[in-house]
Image (cartoon, rainbow, N blue to C red; front, side):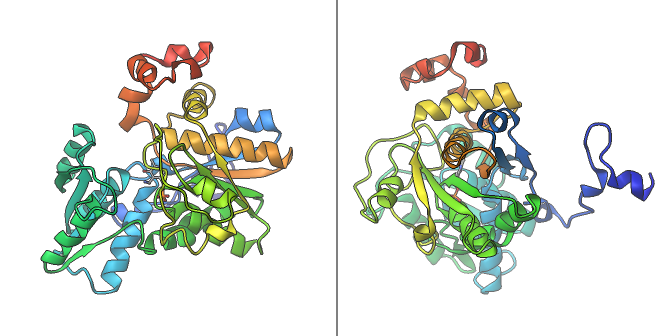
Length: 359
Ligand code: PMP
């Protein structure tokens, strides 16, 4: 193939020259994800609605980036040397990301998680080489909470580190140095707003910080919050922290406090949105039907937020959000009639999308 042929998109719109060369091991395959235009929603709103395809990371989620950054940070600080052990408290994607990164770099991984998690998650982490301790699900202020147990475990070992994803700002730095610049580059700077939900807050804070800095504050940022999270009320009340109550079907997001990852950037938010589970689940089904995208509920919530931000800005704007992971880990819930009925969400699925309720 000639150089000119490689530059031009082929008849399917694929530009071969955009493919990366050889990357060095698994960690080289983290990031550089596509930015996908959500065609139907863009047409509907008259805006460009773009989703960062984080489900394409090797561990299947946005958390591969944070996993890589917390491990690299520990190495750089001399806290982790060859053959060492990483300990983390996590119920999900961070553990999977860490398991991949630790295997590829020769570290042991120990995971503490609440014992309310599915056997499937425990099995997956164990088959990826992690030692897993399911412990009673108690609140953060209880010393037996899984995060505190993870910290104590690391303190008992030599050459071990508790990576502390919630308050370790290497997580946020990963998004300042990778996700943010990728979005800026992929849009050629033509981005008006960014929105996403928070678990640790690393993604929202890091991407917002980068986009605000590079655009001299022009890019607007909006926090999207599920039921049971306190951050929407924190922002809309001008900084009052209420007691956490309620829950959501959107796994991996929702927060009861302002983490250290979020703290430096929460004041940069131009606003926040509260997104109901009804809207999120409907968007899971719509993205599948209209775009062919098989997304988890936190991604769907982000897409709802992007649509609402686009509607409030008006036609002609570009709004970017994050497609955090796929639906593979949640299929037995999101596409199950019994589960939807139990959660009172059956009525949220429009009739023409009911054909996807197959489990
Ligand atoms: N979506 C999913 C599915 C997640 O697992 C997480 C992380 N817990 C997030 C979104 C939120 O990402 P962050 O921790 O960067 O706020």
